[in-house]
Length: 260
Image (cartoon, rainbow, N blue to C red; front, side):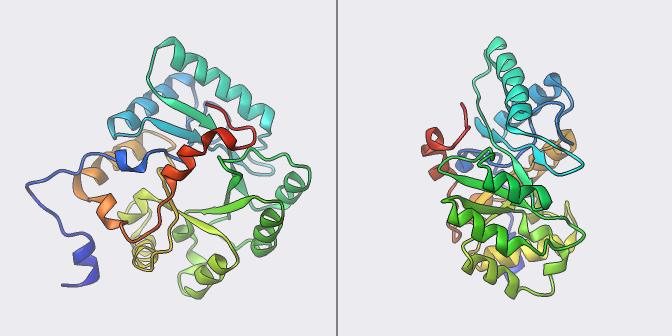
């Protein structure tokens, strides 16, 4: 039996319909109207109810911060957070919501770092990403700058950067530089394509993931996640990876600008 067959061995008698083991979703786009995720408070509530149905009752919203596209600041993020938090409380929904951001490695990020203007995850962690079209030449510099500031960088969905697919050693170089990795759960399906799935499984086999996230933007993602948990035992799949979502949940009070 191949590694792929072992990883995706299905039991027709069982449905794995929960992501409760994740503890806290650290990558999603729930905040309304400030990036390419939810476009309204009503849609955000619908997505939150969907996460709850999957077993996730705690999330940190991570809107894009991308120069020239999604020019979010701590102020815009906090405003959107407060708007959504108010509706959660109004509807008496049992859901813990925090806020942080997903930072594109571009010309603006270095300035945010130097001016201490980052919305961080708990325990001084920062979620960063690159373009899918071209590697950010400054990624190792940014990782170094964050670490020097006492901030732990987490690279979002490394499996989705196609330019690394034929150069697997770069992943190990990033890990050796001190960068942590976050898996998009949908990457273990064919949602982003077969090549992404193959690399995600290779990184899983190598035990290189530190966190998982939904990267939830819209109902299509939510539907795909629902199908995912009906087919795959995600907890078992990732058992040899040091997934630390629960550690961040325990430290949620200590992240700069983070709120619950």
